[in-house]
Image (cartoon, rainbow, N blue to C red):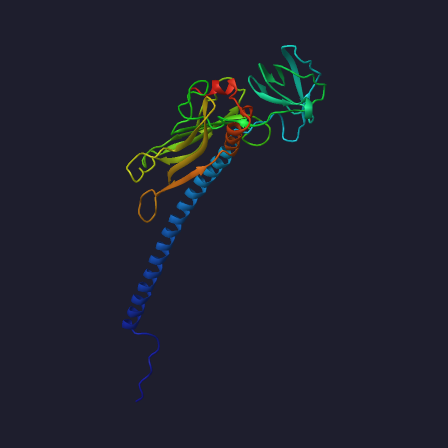
Length: 321
């Protein structure tokens, strides 16, 4: 008799196939799980880098703009609204902008009036809005051009400065002012760094207001730029590293900041899937120069001290708590 050929797999063959299948499946699942953890790590660090990069880029841009002075919008030609006489003592005058934008004057501001042989520099006895008072040595007709040359020498408020620039910037508070956004609006900005721990991270705040603001605006959660700020690691000598450090130069009877170093340490918003820990990162901007302050420092030191515009009284009033 001829034996019939059996079809299919034996029990042993089936069990071996299943073992191989489970082993391969386990390897694939383990690889997928590891890949997902790696992707989670990358996503965490990418989010952290994006947030701290946005904050430091804003800091870099605004430090660079600090000290810029503007009378009105960038497109406006500013001129005397009415004629002024010469030698009449403190004379009231009004400025107007060709595009109708608001004009901002303040006490002790230095203005350059007219062109050519009739040009003179006046310093305001008082100023508010578009109106001011000053002594003129030359008569000027209505429509005479007026400019505010130079920049604020204390556009980055120096640390530990004496009044009227006190209290100044510090390792945790950066104070700056001027036409920061390049739109003709004079603003005062404070960056406040409150480092924390991995368990309770701190914040970086940005508080902006007009230089004519009466009373400093309160710092609240709407002004948070970063909410995952840690204490910076010590330097190689074991010294604490502040959020903000300054290179200070003497100018006239005061000080000016010609370089700012920014160091921020942050952590990921979520724990790393692989280590189960928050991942820290330190971002350092070691040489950020306020170009307007540096330019006026060079000019005022060598040729024209009047180009170093003094701090407006309204800004001095905002420096306190």
